[in-house]
Amino acid sequence: MIFRNADVVLSGDVRKLDLRVENGKIAELAEHLEGEGIDCTGLTIFPGLIDMHVHLREPGFEKKENIESGSRAAVKGGFTQVCCMPNTKPVTDNKVVVSYIKNRAREVGLCKVNPIGAITEGQEGKNLAAIGAMKAAGAVAVSEDGKSVVATNLMANAMMYAADFGLKCLCHCEDSALVDGGVVNEGYYSTLTGLKGSIRAAEDIIIAREICLAESLSLPVHICHVSTYSGVQLIREAKARGVQVTAETCPHYFTLTDAAIADFDTNTKVNPPIRAEKDRLAIIEGLKDGTLDCIVTDHAPHHEDDKNVEYALAAFGISGLETSFALSYTQLVKGGVLTLSELADKMSANPAAILNLQGGRLEVGAPADLTIVDLNKVWTIDPKDFVSKGKNTPFAGREVYGRVKYTVVDGDIKYREE
Ligand code: DOR
Ligand code: ZN
Ligand code: ZN
Image 1 (tube, protein in one colour):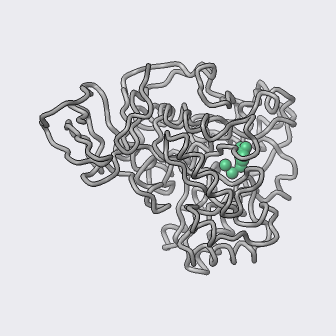
Image 2: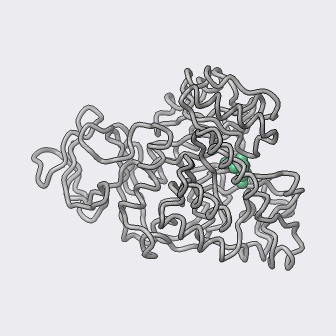
Image 3: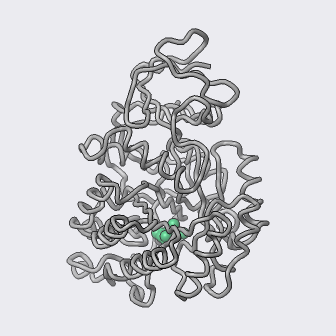
Protein backbone atom coordinates (compact mmCIF):
# COMPACT_ATOMS: atom_id res chain seq x y z
CA MET A 1 0.00 0.00 0.00
CA ILE A 2 1.34 3.40 -1.02
CA PHE A 3 0.23 6.86 0.12
CA ARG A 4 1.17 8.93 -2.86
CA ASN A 5 2.17 12.55 -3.43
CA ALA A 6 1.58 13.86 0.09
CA ASP A 7 3.42 16.53 2.01
CA VAL A 8 5.23 14.35 4.50
CA VAL A 9 6.09 15.92 7.87
CA LEU A 10 9.60 14.80 8.76
CA SER A 11 11.75 15.86 11.66
CA GLY A 12 12.66 19.49 10.84
CA ASP A 13 11.41 19.27 7.26
CA VAL A 14 8.33 18.77 5.07
CA ARG A 15 8.80 17.01 1.72
CA LYS A 16 6.56 15.89 -1.14
CA LEU A 17 6.97 12.11 -1.04
CA ASP A 18 5.34 8.73 -1.55
CA LEU A 19 5.16 6.51 1.52
CA ARG A 20 5.00 2.72 1.24
CA VAL A 21 3.60 0.55 4.03
CA GLU A 22 4.49 -3.11 4.36
CA ASN A 23 3.65 -5.48 7.23
CA GLY A 24 2.43 -2.59 9.35
CA LYS A 25 5.69 -0.67 9.04
CA ILE A 26 6.94 2.23 6.96
CA ALA A 27 8.92 0.39 4.30
CA GLU A 28 9.96 3.21 1.97
CA LEU A 29 9.83 6.99 1.61
CA ALA A 30 10.76 8.24 -1.85
CA GLU A 31 9.78 10.66 -4.59
CA HIS A 32 8.12 8.14 -6.90
CA LEU A 33 7.07 4.65 -5.88
CA GLU A 34 5.39 2.15 -8.18
CA GLY A 35 2.36 0.14 -7.12
CA GLU A 36 -1.18 0.26 -5.80
CA GLY A 37 -2.01 3.21 -3.60
CA ILE A 38 -4.08 6.12 -2.38
CA ASP A 39 -3.65 9.52 -4.00
CA CYS A 40 -2.86 12.02 -1.25
CA THR A 41 -2.35 15.08 -3.45
CA GLY A 42 -3.15 18.14 -1.36
CA LEU A 43 -2.93 16.19 1.88
CA THR A 44 -0.29 16.19 4.61
CA ILE A 45 0.98 13.12 6.44
CA PHE A 46 1.94 13.58 10.08
CA PRO A 47 3.49 10.93 12.27
CA GLY A 48 0.53 9.32 14.06
CA LEU A 49 -0.54 11.76 16.74
CA ILE A 50 -0.03 10.65 20.35
CA ASP A 51 -2.13 12.06 23.17
CA MET A 52 -0.39 11.23 26.42
CA HIS A 53 -3.21 12.54 28.63
CA VAL A 54 -6.80 11.38 28.15
CA HIS A 55 -9.58 10.05 30.34
CA LEU A 56 -11.42 7.09 28.79
CA ARG A 57 -13.58 6.54 31.92
CA GLU A 58 -13.68 2.74 31.67
CA PRO A 59 -13.97 0.92 34.00
CA GLY A 60 -16.60 2.61 36.11
CA PHE A 61 -17.84 5.73 34.37
CA GLU A 62 -19.05 4.31 31.07
CA LYS A 63 -21.96 6.75 31.05
CA LYS A 64 -19.37 9.47 30.34
CA GLU A 65 -17.17 7.47 27.91
CA ASN A 66 -15.84 3.99 27.37
CA ILE A 67 -12.79 2.53 25.69
CA GLU A 68 -14.70 2.02 22.46
CA SER A 69 -16.23 5.50 22.20
CA GLY A 70 -13.00 7.11 23.37
CA SER A 71 -10.97 5.13 20.81
CA ARG A 72 -13.40 6.20 18.09
CA ALA A 73 -13.02 9.83 19.12
CA ALA A 74 -9.24 9.38 19.17
CA VAL A 75 -8.91 8.06 15.63
CA LYS A 76 -11.43 10.63 14.37
CA GLY A 77 -9.19 13.29 15.91
CA GLY A 78 -6.12 11.80 14.22
CA PHE A 79 -4.67 10.03 17.27
CA THR A 80 -3.06 6.66 16.68
CA GLN A 81 -2.06 6.31 20.30
CA VAL A 82 -3.42 7.59 23.62
CA CYS A 83 -2.43 7.21 27.26
CA CYS A 84 -5.33 7.00 29.69
CA MET A 85 -5.39 8.33 33.24
CA PRO A 86 -6.14 6.08 36.22
CA ASN A 87 -9.08 7.94 37.84
CA THR A 88 -11.43 5.12 36.89
CA LYS A 89 -13.66 3.06 39.21
CA PRO A 90 -12.02 0.92 40.45
CA VAL A 91 -8.95 3.11 40.25
CA THR A 92 -6.29 1.82 37.85
CA ASP A 93 -3.92 1.04 40.72
CA ASN A 94 -3.16 -2.65 40.05
CA LYS A 95 -2.18 -5.00 37.24
CA VAL A 96 -5.70 -6.39 36.81
CA VAL A 97 -7.19 -3.06 35.76
CA VAL A 98 -4.15 -2.25 33.61
CA SER A 99 -4.57 -5.60 31.80
CA TYR A 100 -8.31 -5.10 31.47
CA ILE A 101 -7.83 -1.74 29.72
CA LYS A 102 -5.19 -3.13 27.38
CA ASN A 103 -7.31 -6.16 26.48
CA ARG A 104 -10.47 -4.15 25.95
CA ALA A 105 -8.58 -1.67 23.76
CA ARG A 106 -7.19 -4.56 21.71
CA GLU A 107 -10.72 -5.95 21.22
CA VAL A 108 -11.93 -2.51 20.11
CA GLY A 109 -8.94 -2.45 17.76
CA LEU A 110 -8.82 1.21 16.78
CA CYS A 111 -5.95 3.18 18.35
CA LYS A 112 -3.21 2.00 20.68
CA VAL A 113 -4.20 2.55 24.31
CA ASN A 114 -1.50 2.78 26.97
CA PRO A 115 -2.75 2.75 30.56
CA ILE A 116 -1.26 5.03 33.19
CA GLY A 117 -1.26 3.60 36.71
CA ALA A 118 -2.15 5.46 39.88
CA ILE A 119 0.64 6.58 42.21
CA THR A 120 -1.19 5.57 45.38
CA GLU A 121 -3.71 2.85 46.15
CA GLY A 122 -7.17 4.11 45.29
CA GLN A 123 -5.61 7.52 44.60
CA GLU A 124 -6.10 8.01 48.33
CA GLY A 125 -2.66 9.44 48.95
CA LYS A 126 -1.75 6.92 51.67
CA ASN A 127 0.14 3.91 50.30
CA LEU A 128 2.08 3.58 47.08
CA ALA A 129 0.35 1.44 44.45
CA ALA A 130 1.97 -1.70 43.01
CA ILE A 131 3.90 0.27 40.41
CA GLY A 132 6.22 -2.57 39.36
CA ALA A 133 3.35 -4.97 38.78
CA MET A 134 1.50 -2.34 36.76
CA LYS A 135 4.59 -1.70 34.65
CA ALA A 136 4.88 -5.44 33.99
CA ALA A 137 1.21 -5.44 32.88
CA GLY A 138 1.80 -2.58 30.45
CA ALA A 139 1.46 0.72 32.32
CA VAL A 140 3.58 3.41 30.65
CA ALA A 141 3.68 5.95 33.51
CA VAL A 142 2.11 6.71 36.88
CA SER A 143 -0.06 9.66 37.84
CA GLU A 144 -2.45 10.78 40.55
CA ASP A 145 -4.27 12.89 37.92
CA GLY A 146 -7.31 14.70 39.20
CA LYS A 147 -5.24 15.76 42.20
CA SER A 148 -1.70 15.93 43.55
CA VAL A 149 -0.08 13.55 46.00
CA VAL A 150 -0.45 15.71 49.11
CA ALA A 151 2.31 14.24 51.32
CA THR A 152 5.65 15.41 49.91
CA ASN A 153 7.54 12.46 51.40
CA LEU A 154 5.20 10.06 49.62
CA MET A 155 5.70 11.93 46.33
CA ALA A 156 9.46 11.68 46.76
CA ASN A 157 9.15 7.93 47.36
CA ALA A 158 6.89 7.61 44.32
CA MET A 159 9.45 9.30 42.09
CA MET A 160 12.21 6.98 43.33
CA TYR A 161 10.07 3.85 43.18
CA ALA A 162 8.69 4.64 39.70
CA ALA A 163 12.21 5.39 38.45
CA ASP A 164 13.31 1.91 39.60
CA PHE A 165 10.84 0.54 37.05
CA GLY A 166 11.74 3.05 34.35
CA LEU A 167 8.47 4.97 34.72
CA LYS A 168 7.88 8.69 35.11
CA CYS A 169 5.43 10.45 37.39
CA LEU A 170 3.00 12.67 35.50
CA CYS A 171 2.01 15.38 37.95
CA HIS A 172 -1.33 17.12 38.17
CA CYS A 173 -0.23 20.17 40.18
CA GLU A 174 -2.80 21.49 42.62
CA ASP A 175 -2.59 22.51 46.25
CA SER A 176 -6.18 21.62 47.08
CA ALA A 177 -6.15 23.45 50.43
CA LEU A 178 -5.25 26.62 48.58
CA VAL A 179 -7.83 25.99 45.84
CA ASP A 180 -10.36 25.62 48.66
CA GLY A 181 -13.33 25.01 46.37
CA GLY A 182 -12.34 27.57 43.73
CA VAL A 183 -13.76 26.73 40.31
CA VAL A 184 -12.33 29.41 38.00
CA ASN A 185 -9.20 31.53 37.74
CA GLU A 186 -9.15 34.25 40.38
CA GLY A 187 -9.23 37.61 38.65
CA TYR A 188 -11.50 40.08 36.92
CA TYR A 189 -13.90 37.41 35.65
CA SER A 190 -14.25 35.58 38.96
CA THR A 191 -15.20 38.94 40.50
CA LEU A 192 -17.59 39.74 37.65
CA THR A 193 -19.38 36.40 37.84
CA GLY A 194 -19.15 35.87 41.58
CA LEU A 195 -17.70 32.41 40.94
CA LYS A 196 -15.11 31.33 43.48
CA GLY A 197 -11.60 31.89 42.19
CA SER A 198 -8.41 29.94 42.56
CA ILE A 199 -5.05 31.72 42.46
CA ARG A 200 -2.14 30.70 40.24
CA ALA A 201 -0.06 29.82 43.29
CA ALA A 202 -2.33 26.81 43.89
CA GLU A 203 -0.84 25.30 40.74
CA ASP A 204 2.62 26.88 40.87
CA ILE A 205 3.44 25.72 44.41
CA ILE A 206 3.13 22.08 43.40
CA ILE A 207 4.95 22.63 40.08
CA ALA A 208 7.78 24.12 42.15
CA ARG A 209 7.63 21.25 44.63
CA GLU A 210 7.86 18.59 41.92
CA ILE A 211 10.77 20.46 40.33
CA CYS A 212 12.55 20.63 43.71
CA LEU A 213 12.08 16.88 44.19
CA ALA A 214 13.30 16.07 40.68
CA GLU A 215 16.31 18.30 41.17
CA SER A 216 17.22 16.97 44.63
CA LEU A 217 16.77 13.35 43.63
CA SER A 218 18.22 13.74 40.11
CA LEU A 219 15.12 12.05 38.72
CA PRO A 220 12.76 12.97 35.88
CA VAL A 221 9.33 14.46 36.38
CA HIS A 222 6.59 15.50 33.96
CA ILE A 223 4.22 18.39 34.68
CA CYS A 224 0.65 17.99 33.42
CA HIS A 225 -1.56 20.64 31.81
CA VAL A 226 0.38 23.81 32.60
CA SER A 227 -2.00 26.79 32.69
CA THR A 228 -0.13 29.67 34.37
CA TYR A 229 2.47 32.13 33.08
CA SER A 230 4.35 31.65 36.33
CA GLY A 231 4.33 27.86 35.95
CA VAL A 232 5.87 28.22 32.49
CA GLN A 233 8.59 30.40 34.02
CA LEU A 234 9.32 27.87 36.81
CA ILE A 235 9.74 25.10 34.24
CA ARG A 236 11.84 27.27 31.92
CA GLU A 237 14.25 28.12 34.76
CA ALA A 238 14.42 24.51 35.93
CA LYS A 239 15.24 23.27 32.43
CA ALA A 240 17.93 25.95 32.12
CA ARG A 241 19.74 24.57 35.16
CA GLY A 242 19.46 21.00 33.96
CA VAL A 243 16.53 19.63 35.93
CA GLN A 244 14.96 16.61 34.17
CA VAL A 245 11.56 18.22 33.83
CA THR A 246 9.20 17.96 30.88
CA ALA A 247 5.77 19.53 30.52
CA GLU A 248 2.53 19.57 28.59
CA THR A 249 -0.29 22.01 27.98
CA CYS A 250 -3.72 21.74 26.31
CA PRO A 251 -5.44 23.59 23.46
CA HIS A 252 -7.88 25.32 25.81
CA TYR A 253 -5.01 27.05 27.60
CA PHE A 254 -3.61 28.62 24.43
CA THR A 255 -6.88 29.38 22.63
CA LEU A 256 -9.15 30.69 25.40
CA THR A 257 -9.07 33.10 28.32
CA ASP A 258 -11.26 33.29 31.38
CA ALA A 259 -13.41 35.84 29.55
CA ALA A 260 -15.13 32.67 28.26
CA ILE A 261 -16.66 32.05 31.72
CA ALA A 262 -18.60 35.31 31.65
CA ASP A 263 -21.80 33.65 30.42
CA PHE A 264 -21.50 30.78 32.91
CA ASP A 265 -21.02 28.12 30.23
CA THR A 266 -20.05 25.04 32.29
CA ASN A 267 -18.17 23.69 29.26
CA THR A 268 -15.46 26.20 30.19
CA LYS A 269 -15.07 24.60 33.62
CA VAL A 270 -11.83 22.68 33.70
CA ASN A 271 -9.10 21.94 36.21
CA PRO A 272 -6.72 23.76 36.23
CA PRO A 273 -8.94 26.66 35.17
CA ILE A 274 -8.65 28.64 31.96
CA ARG A 275 -6.68 31.71 32.96
CA ALA A 276 -5.99 35.25 31.72
CA GLU A 277 -4.56 36.62 28.46
CA LYS A 278 -1.15 37.02 30.11
CA ASP A 279 -1.13 33.27 30.82
CA ARG A 280 -2.34 32.34 27.35
CA LEU A 281 0.46 34.36 25.75
CA ALA A 282 3.07 32.82 28.08
CA ILE A 283 1.86 29.30 27.22
CA ILE A 284 2.28 30.10 23.53
CA GLU A 285 5.77 31.46 24.24
CA GLY A 286 6.55 28.31 26.25
CA LEU A 287 5.50 26.13 23.32
CA LYS A 288 7.63 28.21 20.97
CA ASP A 289 10.82 28.18 23.04
CA GLY A 290 10.56 24.49 24.02
CA THR A 291 9.67 24.98 27.69
CA LEU A 292 6.43 23.11 26.99
CA ASP A 293 7.23 19.83 25.24
CA CYS A 294 3.80 18.43 24.43
CA ILE A 295 0.26 19.30 23.52
CA VAL A 296 -2.26 16.93 25.13
CA THR A 297 -6.03 17.13 25.28
CA ASP A 298 -6.74 16.17 28.90
CA HIS A 299 -9.82 14.72 27.14
CA ALA A 300 -12.30 14.68 30.04
CA PRO A 301 -15.69 13.62 28.70
CA HIS A 302 -18.67 14.15 30.97
CA HIS A 303 -22.35 13.31 30.71
CA GLU A 304 -24.90 16.06 30.15
CA ASP A 305 -26.14 15.43 33.73
CA ASP A 306 -22.72 16.41 35.09
CA LYS A 307 -22.52 19.64 33.08
CA ASN A 308 -26.11 20.89 32.78
CA VAL A 309 -26.11 22.19 36.36
CA GLU A 310 -25.04 25.45 37.97
CA TYR A 311 -21.41 26.36 37.40
CA ALA A 312 -20.20 25.71 40.94
CA LEU A 313 -21.60 22.16 40.86
CA ALA A 314 -20.60 21.14 37.34
CA ALA A 315 -17.86 18.58 36.69
CA PHE A 316 -14.43 19.80 35.58
CA GLY A 317 -13.34 18.84 32.08
CA ILE A 318 -13.39 19.33 28.32
CA SER A 319 -13.98 16.69 25.63
CA GLY A 320 -10.92 17.35 23.49
CA LEU A 321 -9.94 14.51 21.20
CA GLU A 322 -11.93 15.63 18.17
CA THR A 323 -10.82 19.26 18.22
CA SER A 324 -7.22 19.19 19.42
CA PHE A 325 -5.41 18.92 16.10
CA ALA A 326 -7.44 21.60 14.33
CA LEU A 327 -7.29 24.01 17.28
CA SER A 328 -3.53 23.51 17.60
CA TYR A 329 -2.84 23.78 13.88
CA THR A 330 -5.02 26.87 13.51
CA GLN A 331 -3.71 28.69 16.57
CA LEU A 332 -0.05 27.72 16.40
CA VAL A 333 0.88 26.99 12.78
CA LYS A 334 -1.52 29.35 10.98
CA GLY A 335 -0.74 31.78 13.80
CA GLY A 336 2.98 31.67 12.96
CA VAL A 337 4.17 30.22 16.29
CA LEU A 338 5.27 26.71 15.23
CA THR A 339 6.26 25.03 11.97
CA LEU A 340 4.48 21.85 10.90
CA SER A 341 7.47 19.80 12.08
CA GLU A 342 7.42 21.53 15.45
CA LEU A 343 3.70 20.82 15.79
CA ALA A 344 4.41 17.16 14.98
CA ASP A 345 7.07 17.18 17.71
CA LYS A 346 4.60 18.50 20.30
CA MET A 347 1.86 16.08 19.29
CA SER A 348 3.85 12.95 18.48
CA ALA A 349 7.66 12.76 18.77
CA ASN A 350 7.98 14.38 22.19
CA PRO A 351 5.23 12.35 23.92
CA ALA A 352 6.78 9.20 22.42
CA ALA A 353 10.22 10.17 23.71
CA ILE A 354 8.98 11.14 27.20
CA LEU A 355 7.09 7.87 27.68
CA ASN A 356 9.40 5.61 25.67
CA LEU A 357 6.63 4.71 23.23
CA GLN A 358 7.16 3.35 19.74
CA GLY A 359 6.38 5.81 16.99
CA GLY A 360 6.52 9.59 16.87
CA ARG A 361 8.45 9.90 13.60
CA LEU A 362 7.94 9.05 9.96
CA GLU A 363 11.01 6.98 9.17
CA VAL A 364 11.70 3.66 7.51
CA GLY A 365 11.22 0.79 9.95
CA ALA A 366 8.85 2.70 12.24
CA PRO A 367 5.28 1.47 12.79
CA ALA A 368 3.03 2.77 9.99
CA ASP A 369 1.07 5.06 12.33
CA LEU A 370 -0.01 7.96 10.13
CA THR A 371 -2.31 10.94 10.50
CA ILE A 372 -3.36 12.23 7.08
CA VAL A 373 -4.87 15.69 7.08
CA ASP A 374 -6.33 18.26 4.73
CA LEU A 375 -4.80 21.41 6.18
CA ASN A 376 -6.76 23.75 3.94
CA LYS A 377 -10.16 22.42 4.93
CA VAL A 378 -12.07 24.93 7.08
CA TRP A 379 -14.78 23.51 9.31
CA THR A 380 -16.95 24.55 12.24
CA ILE A 381 -16.77 22.69 15.52
CA ASP A 382 -20.14 21.17 16.44
CA PRO A 383 -20.39 18.82 19.44
CA LYS A 384 -23.37 17.12 17.76
CA ASP A 385 -20.83 15.65 15.34
CA PHE A 386 -18.64 14.22 18.13
CA VAL A 387 -18.40 10.46 18.33
CA SER A 388 -17.14 10.80 21.92
CA LYS A 389 -19.94 10.41 24.44
CA GLY A 390 -18.67 13.67 25.94
CA LYS A 391 -20.18 16.62 24.09
CA ASN A 392 -18.70 19.06 26.61
CA THR A 393 -16.73 21.54 24.53
CA PRO A 394 -16.36 25.31 24.90
CA PHE A 395 -15.47 25.49 21.19
CA ALA A 396 -18.90 24.96 19.61
CA GLY A 397 -19.25 27.29 16.63
CA ARG A 398 -15.51 27.97 16.30
CA GLU A 399 -14.08 27.86 12.76
CA VAL A 400 -10.85 25.92 12.44
CA TYR A 401 -8.45 24.73 9.76
CA GLY A 402 -7.30 21.14 9.35
CA ARG A 403 -9.48 18.11 8.87
CA VAL A 404 -8.33 14.55 9.51
CA LYS A 405 -8.90 12.45 6.38
CA TYR A 406 -7.32 9.13 7.38
CA THR A 407 -5.92 7.70 10.57
CA VAL A 408 -3.67 4.70 9.98
CA VAL A 409 -2.51 2.41 12.78
CA ASP A 410 0.13 -0.23 12.06
CA GLY A 411 -0.69 0.13 8.38
CA ASP A 412 -4.48 -0.32 8.75
CA ILE A 413 -6.88 2.51 8.00
CA LYS A 414 -8.81 2.88 11.27
CA TYR A 415 -10.61 6.08 10.36
CA ARG A 416 -11.57 7.56 7.02
CA GLU A 417 -13.56 10.77 6.67
CA GLU A 418 -16.96 10.13 5.06
O1 DOR B 1 -10.72 19.09 34.21
C1 DOR B 1 -10.30 18.03 34.64
N1 DOR B 1 -10.97 16.88 34.47
N2 DOR B 1 -9.15 18.03 35.32
C2 DOR B 1 -8.71 16.93 35.95
O2 DOR B 1 -7.66 17.00 36.56
C3 DOR B 1 -9.50 15.69 35.95
C4 DOR B 1 -10.38 15.63 34.78
C5 DOR B 1 -11.45 14.57 34.89
O3 DOR B 1 -11.12 13.41 35.21
O4 DOR B 1 -12.61 14.87 34.62
ZN1 ZN C 1 -5.28 16.77 35.82
ZN1 ZN D 1 -6.49 14.73 33.29
